[in-house]
Length: 116
Image 1: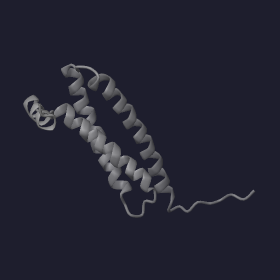
Image 2: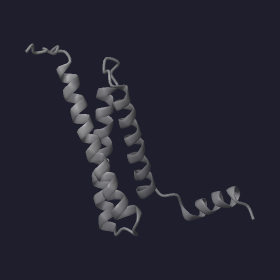
Image 3: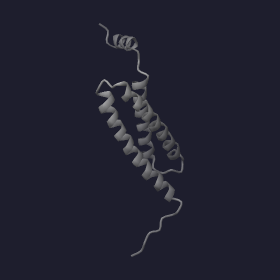
Image 4: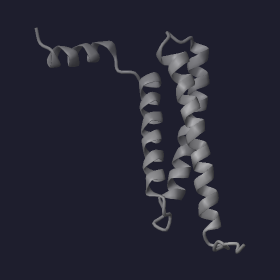
């Protein structure tokens, strides 16, 4: 039986791909926790503080991974698109939880969108 020898140049790309996929799983777990503990409840200040700390780390690490896989030589474009999507979700939830729109502004938008 002949063994196929992979080019050593591809080994780092496979390593990165595997670790990025694992990171995406960690992000999904974080987002599930975020939904259950913060979005579907009125979270206590301690939970928001914990989220602030964790989300900052999740966002910065996801940005780092995106920078690595955005190299033109990196062949898995669908993986890059997945990371871009997860980063957008993480940033959106950060904004929603830590920089919420003032109630008056939200009411004004709703009044303009749904007059009467």
